[in-house]
Structures are given as structure tokens and as C-alpha cells.
Length: 222
Image 1: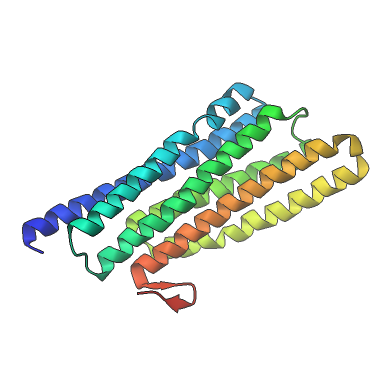
Image 2: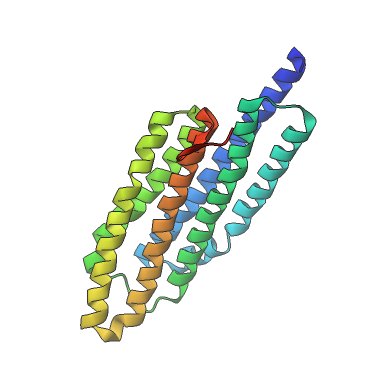
């Protein structure tokens, strides 16, 4: 690859990173708006979020095309291949984060009861931690920061702990207030979606590790 070709290739890699950041921010904003709609019982906002997943899907297709152009146009070295393949993997997780926002918003549209006061604070903390994980995971990729990726992965334990705590409280509500069973089941679904958001952020961090080292979890890929 000539020097000019390398410069052009590096510029396209930067465009790929910029697209990933945009997609990640879009999905993260969707989750934040979905949780706000839930907590404020704002059905108009929930309807907007439920209808807005097309943007994330379109960004996924755009990034896939960027990756294919980069793979076909040049002969990338190993580190370039890892960066491009990491992007392909990351967009799957980001797209699913967008799906989670849509699902939370759709549940909010049909809720007949307000949030349970006894889980309100924990639900806010759980959602906030999951959102922080998403933004930090994307930042770790952009900065190529393994330390940030590792710190972000650890926060999934916090999300999981909130999930178990809220699930226990909702299970008790189902036992003691059967008239609110359906509402409790809806909130169980919502916290499951938030728990998955944390999982997807953790996956992104694992792909950052692969990009920088060639390893993912316990084995070397290339």
C-alpha cells in the first residue's frame, strides 16, 4: 500500500469510528429517552422512541457497507482487519441496544399502572449504570483504551445486582398484590431489557480487547 493509499485508508477508518460513535450515541439516547418516558409516564415520548429504531437500523447497514468497502478496496494488515471486524461485531450489539429501547418504549405505551415506588430509585440507578456502560464502551473503542474497557466490564456486576434486587421486589409484589401482577410482569420485562443493555456493553468491551490484542475471552483469534 502506497503512502497516499495508506492516508486515504486511515481516513476511511476514522470515518468508520465516527459512524460507530454516532450509532452508539443514537442507541444510548434512545435508551435514556425510553427510561424517561417510563418514569414520567410520558406516552408521547414513548411513542417517539418506539417509532425511532429505524435510524439505528439504517446506521447498522451504513457501517456494514463501510466495512465491506474497506475490506475490498485494500489489503488491510492484521491490526486493520481486527479494527474492521470489531466494528462489524460491535454494530450487532449496538443495534440490539436500540431494540431494547424500542421494547421498553412499547411496554410503556400499554402500562396501566405507574412505576412501583419501592423500585423507583433502584430502577433509575440500574438504567443509569447501563447507559454509562454503553457510552464508556464506545469511548474505549475510540480511545483504544483497554483499562477503560476493563473498568466498564466490571460495572455489569452492578447492573446484574440491581436486576436481582428489583426482580425480588417485584416477585414479592406479585405474591402480596395479585391485582398488580400484570404490571409487575411488565416491569420484569423492562429490567430484563436493561440487564441485556449491560450485557451488550460488556460484549463491546470484549471486542475492544480483541481489537487491541487479538484475544477475546480465553483464546486468540488472530
